[in-house]
Image 1: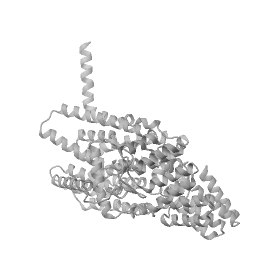
Image 2: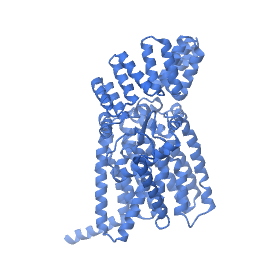
Image 3: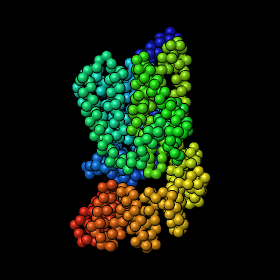
Image 4: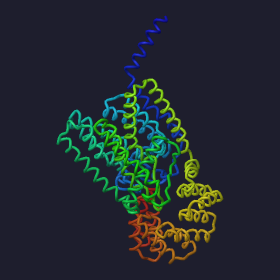
Length: 584
């Protein structure tokens, strides 16, 4: 009997040796479901999920009209039609419950981890390297935000199509099948329609041909990049319409300087993923003379020099480093959100991390080979690292349990964060915990005199019925930063409350002038114009508001009111029907 079991054992382990890559691939797919699986029990997050999903009529069903709106609107800044369509499918699955959104994100991330493994296998022809990179990608804590946050879908879906496109391009490059190239172009378009972040793929393909295809270059391969470049340029032009007011808020030099800090910060967090949070605020002067910008700039220069030095001996290291910087570059234009600055966002490193994992794994493999280190020791070390990363990701997932844990962590890590304090105070205000909201805002004054704190304090005063105190706070915000449209809107709201019509109109007009996309300000202004029988001006304001948000219930309601005031019953009926459709 002992000999039988011995024979069975030998056969089993022999099978494992032959099938270890397949088993590892299965592990790469299943591991994220375990590490990030707690997200299935979480609700929608109190950041972007509200206007992208919960209160967005575009995703509350799946029909021709909603699909059309998904392809003809922004979110309001990004052009993400495929992502919105995926939200529509999730919504009808469980009538707006959060779990289908989280389940889809988990499946997409698992698929991405497997695709990363296959891509690295295609690049290196080395199974161990591919498995290690795939596992690192699958469980890294820096990816928690993209995976467990429902609105992070755009990064996940964009990555899925991007990896499929790149894999098919490499298949065409090796096998020469035109169908693979056509499919690659189609998947690239799908990636761009999920999020334009993938627009850097043509640049990645260029360095692929330069570094990894040096002995088999041909004009045919170079011409194959033309469709990718045309699609990339076209979608970037479309995307710019949504981002125009953000791009205009910073100079190119400021963007370059901030990019140095951001790129080195992500690299640091990829190596030591501690202190992760949803908001990384920046409230100082952007200057290359400051150490926090100068040192990262020098480090980035050294990293690029090292990449250039390794281009012949270890081209995959060079490729990985360049892949990191290229795929990260579109995010450098996103550090402005209104009047607030952020130097990093965790999910922005989702795609770029692949390059760092690849370069690091290849280098470590070279060290192991050069120093003749025992493979068992390397395997144990890799298991320890992956286990530690898994535990950190598991814990980071719990941060997304509630607004208190999410923004509370940001406040603890960055007590000077105005955005985190405003968000936390808003949550407390909605719960009618006005004292708690005031405490959060007052503590923030120790670190900053930002007008955002005044704006949120004004809203807390309004909630408590102290309108004069609220007006003082809004005026203080306006004096500190005259370009903030929100302060003028709330002043107009208080003017309406005090029946100071002329002042309200002036404040709403100023708010619209400062921010043409301010739908609520346009609607409030239009309602006053309707009462004054200035129908043409009111209609102009409402139609412009509709271009910014075609499913705005307040805009549709005001258009119905306008049509009735003008005696246009048929038009009023049409607007009312649209309003009812949106409100369903």
